[in-house]
Amino acid sequence: MLMTDRTTELDCGKLTPTFSQRLVVALAPLTSFLRGFRNRMEINALHDLNDTQLRDIGLSRADLTSAFLASTFFEDPSEHLTRSARNRWRLSLFRSYEE
Image 1 (cartoon, rainbow, N blue to C red):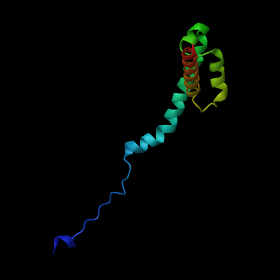
Image 2 (image 1 turned 135 degrees about the vertical axis):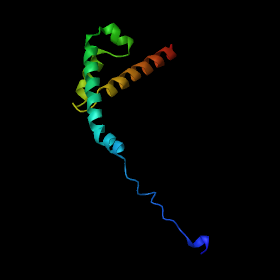
Image 3 (image 1 turned 90 degrees about the vertical axis):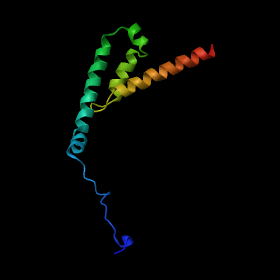
Image 4 (image 1 turned 45 degrees about the vertical axis):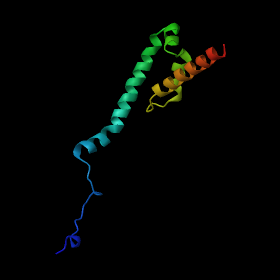
């Protein structure tokens, strides 16, 4: 028998996920929900800060309110606040550049 006559079938395309991989996929929605809930609680705690402290981190009271109104219960409002702070920072940078 020649070496070229022997072929080996490899099942590389049929990988089955391990238990830990299945567990991660199954728990992903729950962890996402819990992260959103935790961030919502943290944003709610930001209401205790005064306007000067909020301005120091690049936010305003209107940003806090709009973050809650723009997101549904299952969405994470922190993304909205991050976007607002970055936009305010870019605008202040642009204004300082013009001067």
